[in-house]
Amino acid sequence: MTGWLRRQRALADYTLAALARRRVKNAGLLLIYALVVFIVASATLFSSAIRKEAEIVLAEAPELIIQDLVMGRHAMISGELVEELVGIRGVSGVKGRLWGYFYDRVNGANYTLMVPLDETLVPARGEAIFGEALPRTRGLNWDKAPLFLSRFPGDLFRLNPAGRLESDSALVSADLILIGEEDFRSFFELPEGVYTDIAVSIRNSREIGTIVEKAGRLLPHARLITRDEISRTYQKLFSWREGIMVVLAGACVLAFAVFAAEKASGLSAEETREIGILKAIGWDTGDVIAMKLWEGGLISIGAFLLGTVLAYLHVFAFDAALFASVLKGWSVIYPDFALTPMIDGLQLSALFFLTVLPYTAATIVPIWRAATADPDQVMR
Amino acid sequence: MISLQSVSKLYNEGRPSETTALSGIDLEIARDALTVFKGPSGSGKTTLLSIIACMARPTSGRIYVDGRMTSGLPESFLAKERRRTFGFVFQRFNLIRGLTVMENVLLPTAPLGGNPQADIDRAAARLDTLGLGPKANVAVEHLSGGEAQRAAIARALINDPPVLIADEPTANLDTELALRFLDIVAGLRAEGRAVIMTSHDARIWGSELVDKVVSMRDGRLDEGTS
Image (cartoon, rainbow over all chains, first blue to last red):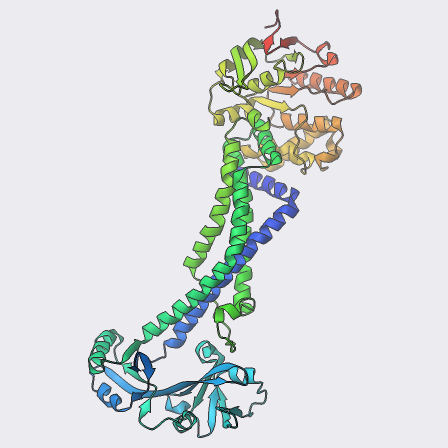
């Protein structure tokens, strides 16, 4: 072992002994620090994972959605436009989509009813495939239990279960009810020949811009939404929720900042005297600062690791149980699905630099002031 | 040999509270002698010890240790000088509370990066010599005054410095312990170390062991001392 390593080991040994001397204070500090990291790391880990989840799910969505607008509001679109859009070079498929919302007075939730584009998924007349949250929130414990929807007092629309959607896609399908076209038109009293919007599949994704331009010329009043734009909307939505969480964590961060500032403003008489003693018995400024770096490092890196590991377990093993209601954001229906564990290195690095470095700097400044003075002056 | 030439020390220089702690001190201290500074409180004894031990800088004047000028050296060099040349026993011992006797004694070895086991063996041997072996793993706040002083001496000697400096070492001790301290000093002299101390205590500066008594008053040496 080189002299430098032995010196570091000796300084670390002393630091551990010094930390153990004030174990209650240091354990309290470590826990508060870890809690701050835990809250912020939970928000960032959850949001990163959920954004990634949305990206994966939306990868299978149509490249382009076309919606008609009347007075700036979404209106039904004519099925005749399907034929016109098929004629655009580069378009591989055009289908009218039928979807709408239904407010369920029974549990106060909003459902999305939709006719699937994939014909193999279209249920038979009177049947439906439910998103995972529906039977859960309506208490349909029996697999074959029918779902009754009431559009107005005295009305009951019966849908027999034909299956359930996998929880892997629950982020966007938790509240979904897939039904056949006839049932859909009947339920919403919708005439033939109109659709909610039109889904356009594009052969080459690099041509999306050109096709959007051509479709825009063909349908000057329509709203054209690409898959990337939907994805970006989801990203922004979850970033916004993450922001709320970080603001909520702000109180903790602020309390911690006050503590760090208090540390920066000066050392206790005991700490100052101790530095004087160490210098008097032969430690130099570098030794004292190295020792305090070990101390700050052990606390801040320890708290960072503890907070991050707990946040990882919280988000990926316990489905972010503490913050799910804020981060997932549904009013009544919360999607129930396990997030794929993933870590955004950049976010984690940012968290590290925003928590560990300020604390270390805050503790080192007063130490440096004391450590550069003569021992006699420090002890006086 | 330690040599002081026209050493002065002002505290709070340039402020209304400016105090002259030392004024024009010229002094030669032999390497293998027991030198005692005596004088009333506030006469500058402790300040003089601090300056000799490189723990404080003189406002003016020069200090030489074995021909090396230590006054005016940057802090990193002063730390090396403190580590290499001096062991310091403080009046209140200044052991670090919460650590054991052994951990306190080992503190000066930490920056040297030596062999940890060799350091521990050396510390244990020194504690045995001073009769503190059985207390090695006891926290220092549980020591008696005499034991704390011996722990402080063991800490001061762990890096084998040629000069031991002690500030009022018997101020907090009864007669028996004060005499025992003198025995320890005799042993250190026999090892060839110089010992420099301050004392109010006539038992110390009246002892036959003492080679030189330096009388101080108001930051100056009394007539006839040099």
